[in-house]
Length: 312
Image 1 (tube, rainbow, N blue to C red):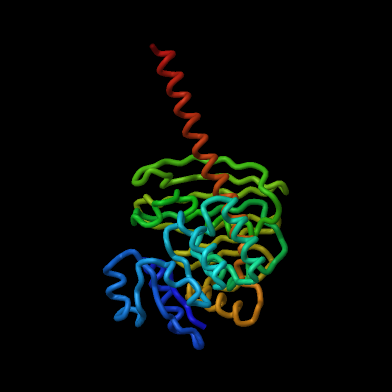
Image 2 (tube, rainbow, N blue to C red):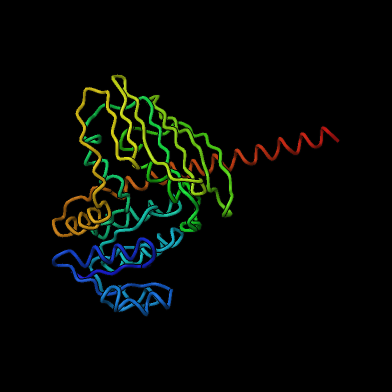
């Protein structure tokens, strides 16, 4: 099968490397707007580089879309219509309407569409997703310094969406309400957000995400009726007081597993680990979080205006 990568930046270049290591897959091209990336493509990836991804429509069986999030919907739609199977980095799109259209189109064309929520593969190894017990509360934190990547969307769609995908795997059912607050520091969109997501079954998820933190921290805590599971992804430690056995945290190569799983889904016709409908649900909740922190900012501004007016 012939494969291509759209966007050979921080993540795309790794997708290209993974394809080159899979038997029966031939990486034939990368598309990137950077002249330097295209110029180095033959040496770095052993393939040609093109400026316009449209040149590859109809030429490939597999494609990884690793371009900026705001371009995902347009590019994914074009390749599905051209007969390619698509793996797109998260988020699947930047609106629920776009995501719904892609889910429908993938079903209509019969092509595999999966999304790069690689954390799912890490959690699958622990065994935490194998049990039916639903936690009462889940806390997730994901923080790190500013890198400049992903600034075309808020930190919610850039980073928190990973944790929202995991929360939806642990807590079934619909979201009842969302509260959030956030701040912009390096970009025009939120760079630091704290959110509480309440579910109809009474469970709650508390999430903290920052791309302007002074240092890295990343973990998760799930409180069950019969114990607590806490994971520190930096130290790779797992604390478990529930009666259910869990495996040690093995980070491994989640991107490699994700790309390989995508290829196997195409070969065998089986469903990928991350289905587009699930990615759509994570996006929908992420957008609710974005809307909630935007409302909180408007509310604070109104209070400040009223306070100033009263003082005068």
